[in-house]
Amino acid sequence: MHSHFYLLAMAALQGVTELFPISSLGHSILVPALAHWPIDREADWFLPFVVVLHLGTALALLLYFHRDWTRLIGGWLRARGGTGNEQARTLWLLVVGTIPAGILGLLLAHRIRDLFGGFAFAAVALMLNGVLLIVGDRLKNRNASGSLASLGFGRALFIGAAQALALIPGFSRSGATLVAGLGAGLEYEAAARMSFLLATPIIAAAGVLEVPKLLHAQMPPGMLGVVLLAGVLSGVCAWLSTWFLMRWFRGHEIRALRPFGVYCLLFGALALLLGR
Image 1 (cartoon, rainbow, N blue to C red):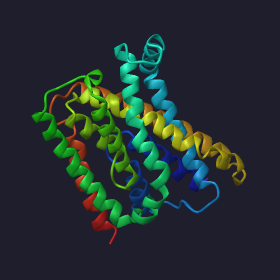
Image 2: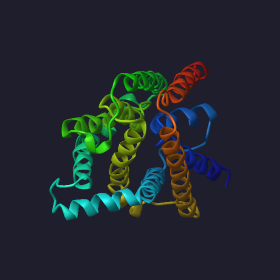
Image 3: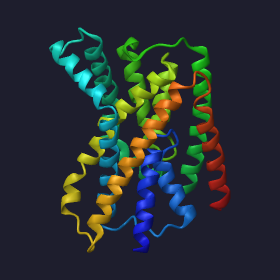
Image 4: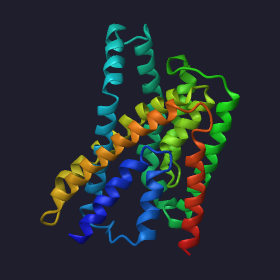
């Protein structure tokens, strides 16, 4: 029962940090180590546990943006698979943006995490993520604002490729795509919407591909209920995080990423100091 509390805490951590631009993978390494959470990452049930957390996050994103997806798919159907209207064109932009991160994730995810999954590396990468966010704010100041539908396919590919940076523990998927979106000339809100819409199929695919392992996993008595509850908690935290962030970016025209960048710099430095 005592260890179940830490699993639920990790679920809440995943739900928040997956969407805030502060790196869920980096936090999943740093926070349990610093707080000495008794979580056995080598246990048979741990991978299924992570799968359920990802599925919960993806479902939360689908629920939050269900109107967007309905409009996009409806527009695509009206255009008969072409780019004859704004919604169809936007959907194709998302498809193009999903391709590079999807391919790199399938080919390199486990190898990169094995090479760079250490505590100190994650802390340093989190600090570099903070620098990236602060630089992103300066990009916003220098570029003309634009809407999501105004993107070219080359820029959509660039924003999608930025997601691959999140394969490195400490770098944030949403942070990388937000900064890439700002660099491509998007408003904060449009960049955030692009980031979250791009994240949905990637996060969902990461979970779905591991579902066979989930179905065949051997779990201790009572563990399945805890894992499912953790998935729900991760989803609720992800939905609330998305709700907050969309309002945050809608209400800020400059320096919206700076607080998150400062946090990453401070927490990464603190982790290095305390982790020695």
